[in-house]
Image (cartoon, rainbow, N blue to C red; front, side, top):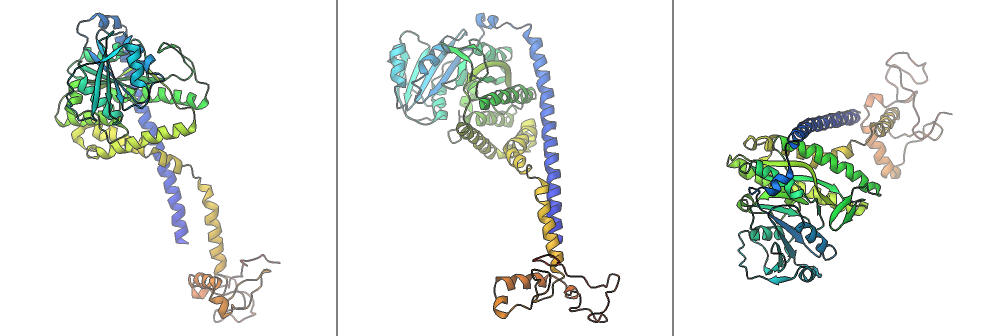
Length: 472
């Protein structure tokens, strides 16, 4: 019985833990909401005095190399490149890296933009897969195309970093759609504080349900799929609350791989993207924190609360499950690779607050939330039945069992006792104290003759309660 009570107490204790867990999670979200609100107010105040057209005309605007890793993207690569070349920015180049594409991605680019091989020496400052050839557009010298062996998205981005000529590097997905002013808004922090800011990221919104013309979003709308509509709310909460809040305390741990701008020198200094993880975008930012904090260099990774990038969201559960599984595996790999930063005061808020929060509420969150859905009432009736059965067994003498109508059957035979039923009965009887193995008129204590009137009080023999049936 003590074991049953302990199990029940464990259930209540775990319920209390889940309640405390959700209270701590909501407190964390409330804190992020506070910091995000302050960041938005600061952004509104600065926005009244900012003008993106000033940066467009400014000679101090840093150049940007836009990196586009592509693998079998022949369906939409032409529209993507045209939209990138038409971005409003004083000086930027577009580098498309074909990562071993087996379709006509490179051929379509050659036909559409008049590409020709360019005799440029490739210096792999960051090791990458073999580069077959480098091409440049005859009509627009800003467009470069690299044809290389397959090595993955991270390897393709590292190849682009090696070829980048500008001060800043912008990494985007091949199917992403940028607003015309995306680079102007995202690069503004580098102009305001060029020595301190090492990376920026903006809001990534969902293009499901939107009208797209010539590589740009012409009309914003909601998706028809309910699954995609739920993700619209999720994306807004994640970017406008979580990332804006973490950015204000300089603890932003992820810049979306769909769109992010970084200083080229810092990326080369830390070795570019890691190729043995599926969460290369988050791992790069965490490694940047670790590298710069270990050397006590002042820096900032900021978030720009402007919708600068549009991407497609999964509209089926199968695709969504694969996407979220990949994200969760990437987070686990990031935590494992940088486990030395966890609760380490050397890394400031990143090690003491941001990373432990990610472990507690992002990595372990699904496990705790699902286990907390098991109701206590589903366990209670089982414990009650076990308690009642054990109480009934105490009234049954050794070697006897109750009949279907409440009487006592004869003792079990030797063959029956040797079977499973006999072993179970002996096991149950062994757990009952010897003084309690009695029923009325059978095995009574000394001083209580069989057939004598039942005594009142705690020494009164217990009346048997049938296990296999009910009293008639």
